[in-house]
Image (cartoon, rainbow, N blue to C red; front, side, top):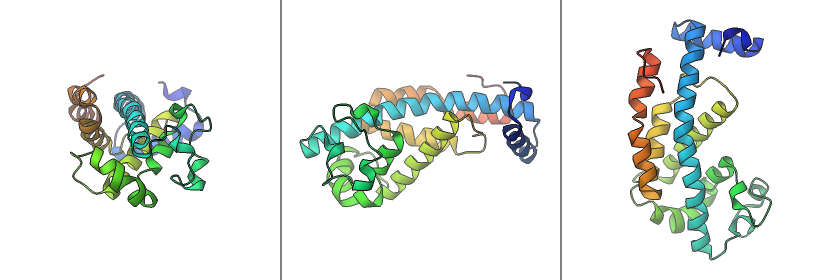
Length: 195
């Protein structure tokens, strides 16, 4: 992406981050592009699998395939963020999915439904939610073509891989095979790494 093709306000942001990182703005633009592409691949794997996992686990737990419309399970304010078509859970956004791991759902979903389905996750629900929130922030920044250069990208990859160990072992292996931590470090240091 050429520097000249950026709108002035976006270019100003890139210049500021480039100055803080002591690299030319053109280099930041290229590295950010490479980091976005690599991280997007990881997030896509995570998002597709976590969506299926959540739907499957809650459907089994509630014996209701349209659980996402159930105001006894989902807080009314959150129902507005969920899928609006009762036959199409796939329309659920990642922000809605993340919400299901918030404090409000600790007793109703985490303890009886998600925690047993994620036996390799040894941390608390709160840490799960924090990691999921970080992933969503990075995902949204990539989707909006924002700068992610200094964001916790390796941590997003580690979290994604860790959760996939319980959700879909092949997805976890795919993420591991991407050698994302090494590539992210190489891109940031400017020692190649390409994608």
